[in-house]
Length: 166
Image 1 (spheres, helix red, strand yellow):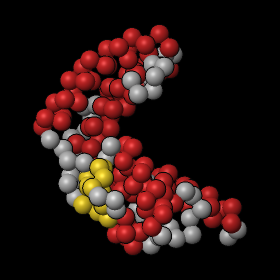
Image 2: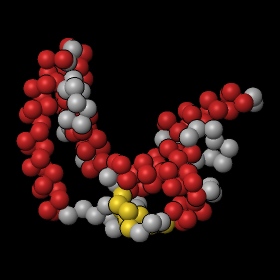
Image 3: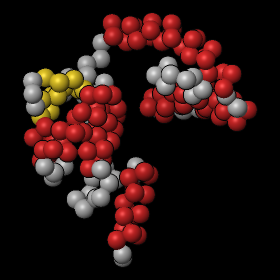
């Protein structure tokens, strides 16, 4: 197997979700690969809220040097999935009822504005994707799938808003 086909297979495995850990010879961005695995562990509950992890632990877990582990932590910090505790320790962001209520209150204020900006910029195909996502919203009893379907609907409708954070 030549280098190109080997690389293509690794990319396909990563994008299909079949790989749970970056492969030692991966030419993909190692920090992004580590962040992807950790993100899945956090979102699935495998890494619970308030779990503490050091960058050294991550480097050992993934068989990498500390630098890609540090860069993966930066990615997750920017996404709000972890918070920094000390210089080398991260904590999975705690989930509180107060934080959830605050987030929902903010969304209640921002989403109508985002829709006003977005809807004029959406195509008929965008609306069809939103309808398809909405149809899927009640099609599963699996909590993770329900959330993914819910967010697919909201992301589709707000995709036309110029400020991407809206």
